[in-house]
Amino acid sequence: MPLADINAPAHGAYVQLEQLIALRFPARQLKLGRRTRALSNLAGPIKSNFRGRGIDFEEVRNYQPGDDIRTIDWRVTARTGSAHTKLFREERERPVLVVVDQRNSMFFGSRHCFKSVLAGHLASLLAWSALNGGDRVGGLVFNERGHREIRPRRSRKTVLTLLSQIASYNSSLPLDTDNAEDSFADMLSNLRRIARPGSSLFLISDFRGASRQGAREHLFELAKHTELTALACADPMEAELPRAGTYAVTNGSERSELQTGDRHLRDSYHQRQLRRQALLSEDLVRLGVPLLHASTDMPPFALLQTYFGDRRR
Image 1 (cartoon, rainbow, N blue to C red):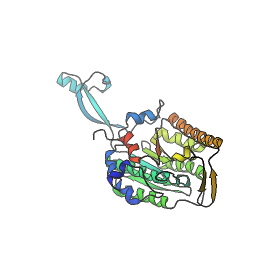
Image 2 (cartoon, rainbow, N blue to C red):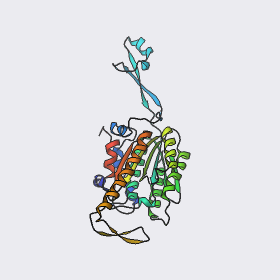
Image 3 (cartoon, helix red, strand yellow):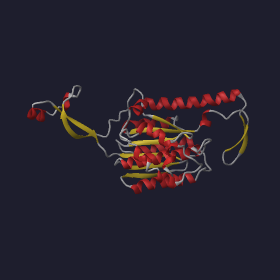
Image 4 (cartoon, helix red, strand yellow):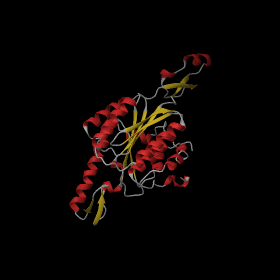
């Protein structure tokens, strides 16, 4: 994948493993450990109970107005005759889990690519960035039939295994089954089992089934003990029906016609999607979980750069 394409949307109905691997180059411009103010604002005024990864001592410097007096280094202060304070930094190493939805509901798109492809590109950028930052990287790929876990390790081989599983699950779409509502809660249950406290989780999905009570309870528990970030994949046609006309549509096994000239139908369709988005946003804000909106007509790299861009470049 040429580097010139990083500012363009993803393309196609299926992911290409070579493209996912090539994303390791632009991923160097992302720093997942740097939670920008823009990302923090997405979490809303209510903060989760997650208290971070811990801190390590970094250095001592001269005291400055506004520094916490509890961090004053009294030994250095006594020896030098001027106030000095200790600086700390967050631990660099942490488990990062990238969770990728490859259910039938993700096998849809009207612009550039399918949602399942968008999810694959986002996951690849996040995984490579985490590895570049010295984190242990793992993940979970799931569909209606099951899931595959990749235990976090600080190795290129582990990232390649994750990307291979994404490509494998993606190539099996569409499936001849449809229990997306239940599969989301099942995935969260499995995620709670493998996610250790302090882990950083990136959940990439269209969140079909997230409003069910079981799923909401699992999200609540995950948000208490991990640093959870949600990336919601969508397509413009999910919010607005195409202009008035007759369209042939299929679910992969059956074919029918869709009439979009009815104004009441168009308004009802739009309002239903707005309500679904609002409910998801309200639930996640209540948990202190930032929600990033990704669309098939948007470059995945540009979205992540907004919130995780390396400001030093």
